[in-house]
Structures are given as C-alpha cells and as structure tokens.
Length: 174
Image (tube, rainbow, N blue to C red; front, side, top):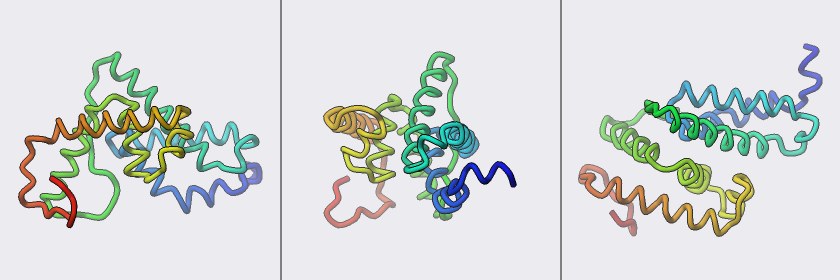
C-alpha cells in the first residue's frame, strides 16, 4: 500500500510491542476499550510526527500515551464522571486473583493523575526513576516524591483489605 512506504517500521513496532502498549494503556485508563482508544490516539499522533520521531518511536508513543491519559483525567474530573475498570489483558487467573486485581485497579484509579502515571511507569513498566522522569518531562526528584506519595496513598486505601488467601512472597511485608 502507498501509505505504508512512509511509515517504515511502524507495523513492526505495533506487532512486537502492541500487547505491552495496550496493557499499559488499560492500566492508565481503567478499561480495555478506553485503553484501545488511548493507544489509537497516541498512534495517530505518532503517525503525524513520524518524520521527527523515526529514531525512537516507542518512546514517543509511550510519552504521548501518558500525556493523553493525564489530559483525559483532567477532563473527566471536570465532568465528574466515574470510570469503570475492566480486567487488563493477560492470563486468566483464579477468582480471588481477579478480585484482587480489580480492587487494586480501583484503588489505583483513586490516585491523582500524576501519581497514577508515575506508579504505572515505575512498577508496571519497570522504568528507572530517570527514565520515568524523562517520559513525564519532570525531574527525578519529582518522580521520587510522587511515587512515595502514591504508594502511601495506596497503602491507606488498601490498609483494611483482608489478604489472608493470598500468599506473601518471602521477604515481602503485608
């Protein structure tokens, strides 16, 4: 096709990294449908800027997804809408694990946009503090303090949970 000649490598990026990008988008938005919309919007922006970002398109795509997600959260907060959370893509689990995942997603959705984005970057994407700062366009210190506040808030939100049926890995604290 004619349009593909101008976007060399884009189809390979989507084929190789598409499921990981979608999983991140689902975490950022709270549902699979909204995650698909977010990823599509980021891909559209990537295609418009393809000539400039050809060297590292995944980095541009991820940064765009995080910024679009924050913009959506701001609009949603102004409209006072409630986001419905769905199960992220992945392997099927037991009913207890699915319930725990759903509860964690709901707790994550209660965090402010920047805290949520930092926690997704640091603990889902497993980026370093410097990499997360680069993606978000802020300082490493901001990432550290935002992650600390986000984790503290998650601990508050989950403090009353009864996690007895779930095994705790060696060395981990409840």
